Length: 254
Image (tube, rainbow, N blue to C red; front, side, top):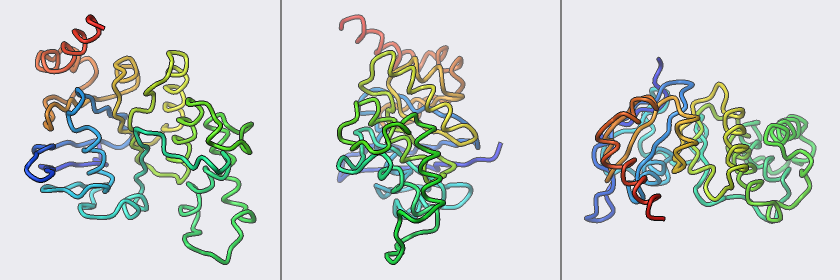
């Protein structure tokens, strides 16, 4: 399988505090890969390293075989990688349609072309409308994003993430804060909109992880202690000790 994302001996420190310790990871084309681990394991930091938001302290990140270490987030995005955030990151005072259109503009070749009226760009409009249909918000196109329900806002953020046509999608806790019904709907949405793409997700809901991921990597104290299929991860004693067992104890005492 062709490797789409490769992390080679990746390290990250903030001052004297080491967060990521020599992570090596390879994710194949079309794979749905989940990164799990206890709070404080470094999952969001790892996402920020892959997407260029944080600089690496050491190591390399490759995207489709190209070294993207040190590139800025927008430069990585233009190479086909898009991400969502743990905290919903949308334009609250713009409509659903305008939010999606922002995600489409650059990939449609508009760039910073200030002399074009975006409302008249037929391809941008077509792709924005198509994306709204895919995320189930076509009927809400003219509603201000800030007035949407929480689940709708999360769906909108996923829509913005995929609107540019990226082949690699990183989702950071896409079902956080959702009810069971909303979570089930979100899983189906993620499954549909990432069909044919490479998906990497950070997620705490083990039902989501084991139901959606092809492979799982477990991050504990900045180190990947195991990578494998859902069945292999369930049966891994180190994972049970370091994470799944701890999660079970927390649930039992809740």
